[in-house]
Image 1 (tube, one colour):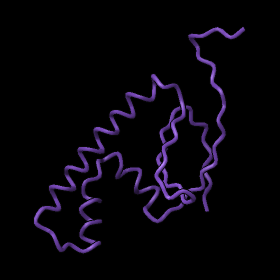
Image 2 (tube, one colour; image 1 turned 45 degrees about the horizontal axis):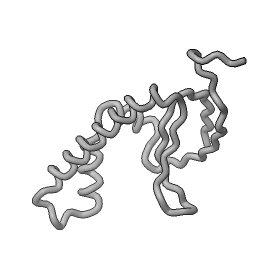
Image 3 (cartoon, one colour; image 1 turned 45 degrees about the vertical axis):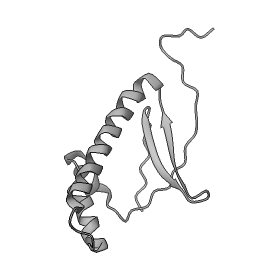
Length: 109
């Protein structure tokens, strides 16, 4: 198994919490830097969901493979590029540590 370690300063991670059976989101970075990215991703997500809904009209008895193919076909190019490197059946172990950041615009005494 390949292990990738990166020092990421800004990230928004969505994952499914197996213990509580609910989706979770973890945001790393300064809020004023993360929010524009988060809103852009929400907009892209809604657009993709609309494309999936349009593609599924008239296919009430579509198989699971047909539905998955419709979902795959709505991937934007940047997601296709990352998908080819990662794959759908990959697993990730997520371990993170919260470290306080020192903002450049604030002086620390």
